[in-house]
Every structure is written in structure tokens, then in C-alpha cells.
Length: 323
Length: 305
Image (tube, chains in turn cyan, purple):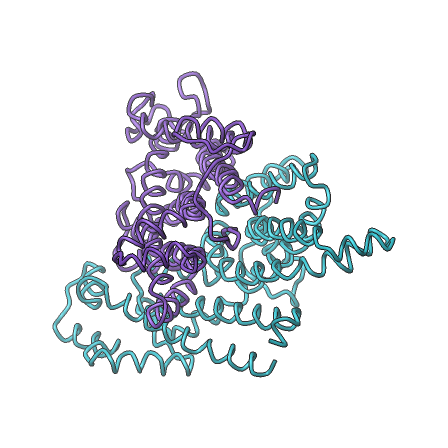
């Protein structure tokens, strides 16, 4: 068990260093000189000296391999350099926007789990009935609906409904307050984006719950439980669901990383000042230091969430733990 | 983002059996049998065909020029003259959606096919040669897979810039490892099958064994992945274009139609926001229905699930 945990944790480092190398390489593929693009895009004239200062500032006047070590060393100390656009330290830019994104992501996960597990289970138990058909359609539609469109439509619905009910349209506030300061205001900001992302997330998990449940229900031990006259509810809760949840946990963990990708568009729709929106801004502004830092943050979260899933899986499944 | 393909057995040649259990051959026979056995998949196929044909014949069936402004007819509600209304620049929404279908399918199909075939080659080669090559390739794929699709696409766009071609590149790259991973696991099972040993014993070259003995046997899961990829690529293109980092004006694209105007005019002219989104949703919905049916047919183990 400990051996597995340690080797699994150690595997995180080569993956992260590899990802860092990839990001580093990609950012060096930018056609032409980053500084020329930077200085030229403002439409202002610049001196040779400004160019040299810019080079020195980003450190691209040094050999590649040194630059890479700097990048890795900086990452280890959470020092990603300064934003090329705002001039502020990248880590500050990210830290101020991180809480809201994290909160939306966690809320979306909760929403997804609350919707997916019961609906997926019911769908499997009532296989090939109209309930099953409705649930499956709902989940396939979830995979097909673009999150940003769902966001726009939900804003539209909120506007129309509040107009009809209160006589004036109401929009969720956009300036973020932490949950513990003003829970109602906080939730009114976070709820719609979380629902928007959560729907797709729920759809994926629902499909997994259904298919895992169907597979488990055909197992011999379920038949045995039924044959010895166990109550149906106990069979489902204690025997079936417990085993069916293993693959569902995996999907939820893997999808968590993609949730962060979903944040990019959803934050744009709802004007949330999170890291997703920051990423779009950084790409638009050709702020390469910020872009590479943000990509690394997202990748790190993805790698860590995979780690958590694997460890959790090992804890749940004795076959892995004892192997 | 998960593609559910069962761990395959050694026989995954896409064969279609009719009700009597006979193997169906020929494109027409296969299509008819598929439609009869998978009515839900048939609905999906019809949806995809409608939007696909709309894209191909957009130039002939679109009532207006999709890029010409008409300032006398801005944000007009749906009417006989403009079936789906007009946008904030007076452009006909129906015409833009028809031409948008063309953009969506060009990006979706190209990314899926190029990404899929690259993944197929890498996956099969990785499984066939095994050893150190397999080990290293798997590590590299692990790393690329750690990037969520849209994040990878954004990183690529930030380097190469926007526009249709760059968007295709940006979406293709993250699809490659996802395909390679699934193809590899199917190919690993096939590598152990006696006929591959037999082919090797007969002295066939690697290329011949890979192309004639391995590739045809991973076609089942491969076709299912490719179908799923088309949907994912269309969604990714829409998202990038919506962010202003994908297809650029004046090219009509669904995601682009939802950018800017759609939110501003949402309450006064909701049709601007609703119809392009519906187009994306119906197309991807159709592709997913079709893909599920295809998986059920090609992969009997997954049937009834």
C-alpha cells in the first residue's frame, strides 16, 4: 500500500516537469521576437535599448537550457515572474482571482454529484423505460450544449423571469465577496455559473453511473443477495452502488481538470473575474509570462486531481491496495 | 471528455450483423441495417445530415449574403423575410447559420480526422513495437493529456494567432494523445493474437503487419472515437470563436455569432442568442446520438448500456 502511494506520488514530478518543458517549448515557438511583438503591438516606436531591457527582463538573452532551469526553479518557488502586460507579479494576479474560480469549480462538482448519482442509478434500475429515456436524453443533451450558450440563455431567463415577477430585471452582482462575508450575495454570484458548468459535468458522470450500475447489477453477488431475500433498497445501496461508484469517482476526478477549462468560457459569459477570464485576457494581450504560468497552474491542478483519484481509488478498492 | 469504449477483445473488426445474425456487406446494406437496428442513432444521423448538407449547399440555399449588412433591418424579429430574424448589423441569421455549419464541419471534420489518424498511427505503432518506444511514448502522451483540451488550444492560439487554420491546428493537437491512448489499448490485445505472430513468422515487414493486420482490427473503437471527436471539435471551435480567439469576422461561425451582440441584445433580440446556440447543440447532439449507436453496433459488449 505505502509503496503504491509513494510511487504514485513520485510519478507526479516527471509529468509536471514534462508539462513545464512542453509549455516552455510552445512559448518559444512564438514566431519572431516576443519583445518585438510586445513593443510593436502598442503602435509606439521603441529604442534598441528598450528591446534589450525587455530581453533582459524576460531573460531570453540567455541560453535556452538556463532559461528552462530558471523557469522550473521559479515554479518551485511559485515565482512566475512579472506579467508583461500589467507589470505586477504573476503570482499576485493569479492569487487574487483564484478563490472565485475555485469556489465555482467546487460548487459545480457538488451540483454534478448531487444530480448525477441519483439520476444515473434510477436510469440503470429502470433501464429501457421512459424514465431511462428522459435521463439519457438529458445527459446526451448536456454533452452537446456549449457551456457559454447555456450561460447566455440562463441570464436571459433570469432577466425575463425577474422582469415578470418583480417588474424590473435583476442581474447577479459581479463584484465578488467571499462566502463567509455575505453568503447570499456570494451565492447569487456563483450559483448560475456553477449550474452552467455543472450540467455538462453532471451529464458525463450520469452516463458513467448508469453504465457502471448496469454492469454491477448483472454480477453474481447481486443475484445472491436477491436470492437470499435481501431488501431491494439494501441490495442497491450496500452492494450495487458501492461498487458502481468506483468508475464514477474516476470520471469525477478526471472531469475536474476539464472543469477548469470550462471556467474559461463561463467566466467570460458571467463577467466573473477568475483565472479563466485572466487566461483569455493574457492570450489576447500576448502576455506570455502570464499565459505560461496560468497553463502550468491548470496542468498542476489536473495532475494533482488525477493523483487524488488514484489514491482514493486505491483506498476504495482492495485489489489495487493489496497488489 | 471521456469516451466510453470498452476494453476490447481481440476481434474488433467492424462487422454488422442483421436480425438473422448474418454479416451485412456493402455501404447501402450496412446503412439500412444500421438505421433499422438503431432508430435513435438514425435520428442522430438525420440531424448530422441536415446540418452537413446545409453547410455544403449553403451558397445555394441561403436566402441572403451572410456577410452583407443591412442597416435598414437591424435586430429584426423572425419574419417571412428573415425566417430567424437579423442580427445587430442587419445580417440574416438563417444565412449565417447555414454558412456557419460549413465552418463548423470544416473545423470539426478536419481536426477529428487529422487528430484521429495521427493518434491511430502513434497508438498502433506504440503497441506493436512495445518496449522502450512504448514506454516513452506513453509518458509523452501522459504529459500532453494533462492539458485540458481548451487550455491546450488556447496556448496554441496564443502562439500562432487566430483564424480557421490555426484553430484547426489548436484543436487537432490535444486530440492526438486522446486517440492514441484508446487505440493503443485495443492494439495491445491484438498484438497477442496468433495471426499477428503468423504474419511475423512469414517474414512480413512491420508496415505490412501494421497496415494489414493491426489497423483494420482497431477500426471499431477508432470509428467511435473519431465520431466523438467531431462533436468535441465543433464545441471547442465554438468556444474559441466565442472568446474571440477562434474564427474571425467576417467568416460566419456559430460561436462568433454568440459573441458581443448576443449578450448585449439578449433581452431585446433574444433570437440572436438562441438560434446559433441551438444549431451547435442540435449538431453535436446528433453526432453524439449517432456515435452512441455506432458504439453499440461495433462493440457488442457495450450493448444495452
